[in-house]
Length: 182
Image (cartoon, rainbow, N blue to C red; front, side, top):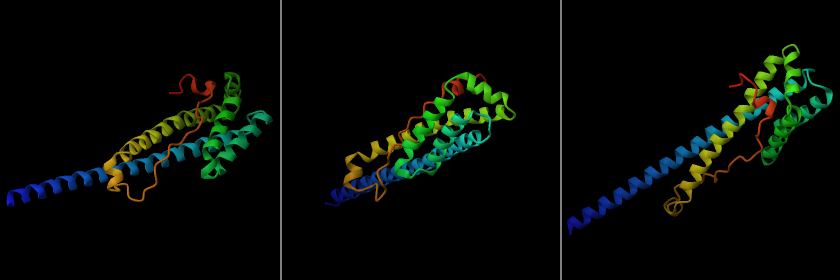
């Protein structure tokens, strides 16, 4: 009888430790999502800020300046529900303006244009990386949250179900393929 009781206690402790470890892992994944989302927000803000700076610098033609200014301003001011659409529209505006190398060359020839083009190219390259890192973290947390043990024992607590950030983040060809833009 006592041996059976000892085995039951050991089994309950093992299950408890396993559930505790799983809850801790889930908590770490949620923290990683929060950090990745903050990094993604910072990169999106940086891209919009650099675009606004370039749009108001007088380096671009008026039509391109207006297009970039409106898209970047909309991306910075967008509510959370509309952020993915606004950021996608900024990506499309950047591709429309910097679709050809001639526009990038025109920016580079202006005073201070070389630095502006470099900064925009770096910002445009970092957004897809930050988004991919965020979405990978979301995917890992979702996979763990789908397990029965997590649902049955409510190991996720009251944390909201993680959502991926889906947007068009394809960079403009002329900015992405610039020599020295590594």
